Image 1 (cartoon, rainbow, N blue to C red):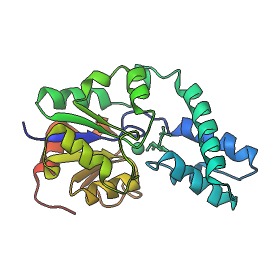
Image 2 (image 1 turned 90 degrees about the vertical axis):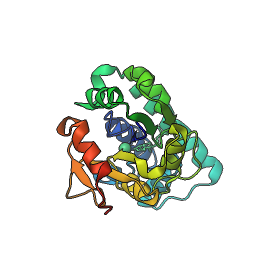
Image 3 (image 1 turned 30 degrees about the horizontal axis):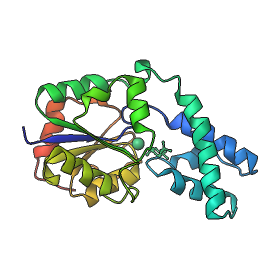
Image 4 (image 1 turned 90 degrees about the horizontal axis):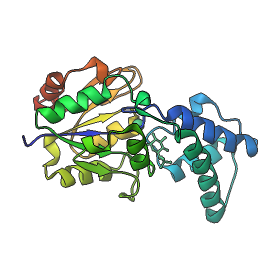
Length: 221
Ligand code: G6P
Ligand code: MG
């Protein structure tokens, strides 16, 4: 089939947001920045360095570029320690079944994640082999909402952009899909996520046939 599904990772396939939060919070505490879980919502789908900029902005703290590199590395080292324990049990409900079913229906499967740790995480979860293409933070220079990550994923699958359906939990990711001229299913709360063709609370709440109806519908929001 000449259709593809492109999946974001964090928040769609695995709940890593809590670990990102713990690691950013530790860094924030060290700099006496009052960083809350609400603030953490702003970091979803956003690259590591951009996340650090947002965190520093919240605290009104200025750092040089070289200091920022060191701070981002410290955060990532803590984050890696936290996600070292990930196993297939951490896959979000329905995600593995949904991807396998799509694959069985000959839909091509790609990863489109901003994370530079994406391959490490896929391996920990034991689902790396389910993907025909894997585009992550190491392949892109522009962060979501720039469409680069999804355009590269479609290209890797050898498919036109409009034949691909994106699954995203972050507002920045939904906007990236729109900017790539791709339809999108939001994963999360429909009061929060705007611009997706459909929003469901998780991949356990949708069938592959329903997703294909979204992809094949002519209404592009
Ligand atoms: C995902 C997460 C973001 C994270 C980004 C970069 O998009 O939703 O919260 O900042 O990846 O992750 P990394 O693993 O490269 O620090
Ligand atoms: Mg995400």
